[in-house]
Length: 507
Image 1 (cartoon, helix red, strand yellow):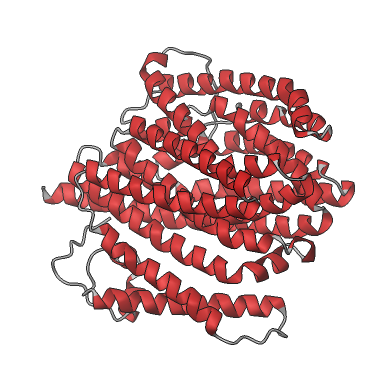
Image 2 (image 1 turned 90 degrees about the horizontal axis):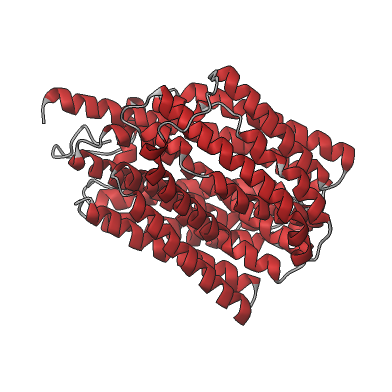
């Protein structure tokens, strides 16, 4: 490979990881606002309110899949993107969004009868407007990601979240009911459409001129999206069908916290790396190495967050939600594992898509959907919600291992990543055990206990991971990927000696 090509690839890797850092920061800020919102709403509303809104959201999310044809991914991934391509994809999404809104409106009555809750009908009638409103947004985010304009994307998403949180909290103070969540979602969608056109103006032209060029990608994207949704929501559907609205509110908020605290911190890696991996499609070796490194980075982040939540779940629930949600703690500690595994699996989709394996990605997620659904249903019939939570997390971990092995094998990359992956996993388990063994006075305020556990966990995990990496001779792996992307001044502080055989151009 020429020096110019190596330099170009190195620049792509640097841009992508810098973008990942910005997007993780973006997601962290957005989710921090979300946590503030949940903390306030949990004290203004009841589990019954959250259960009702969560039920309606599950139904809405299922029908929203009708419009998920990989619009954003197609824009980011395309080697040569024309205005006609964007218009065609936008028109496809608009047509499908109108069908989605109509379907949600029509199914509202039958859904309310099936769930034995008449309130669901009125909520769904109003929420049917959301996909229709969203359809008129500018393709701002995928275009910004394609151009590596992560900071502008940060402004767009942060602004939207600030408006959403403000709207929902104000509505909750006024209405003191689940309608606050519904109206807040509608106002958020309206603002998001307007801000997308301000950040990236776009005058749509209705056309399906390039439909044949995108229909295959759209079909497999749709199948993957449907399977992804079923895989991520199968446990909630089963719990909802066998429990009261109030109990489902507890389970749903535990699941939602796992998504916020773990999934939404790992997810930005996928968005940030997709543009860079797309540029590496002509260099299979470089592409395979980058996919491996992305998996390793996601694994470290997912491990420390998951183990941290497991040891702090009771305190997290009390601090963030309040006493009426204390039952959610045990579910949060279990569902954190499944949430992390599914989030890492979604990061892997960048590797599948940019390697032209969209069909394989769809097949894997279809398999997930079938296995998750069947196993969670069996667990629910045999035992109950707690067994469903354990089954969901166990199936998620098993399927992730199978998927990453297949992806690396098909890309021709060595699967030694599994050996190096043991280091963060060992560090995470040891950290969780060590923190639980440390005597922390129970009379301390809950927020102080939470802060102490989090600080001790972070320090112990970091020291253990660094020690295990040192024992391996600082070999390439997840730690090396993150270390080489740290600012130079932080690299000098850490007692790490990288061997010369490591390539400086690792992504």
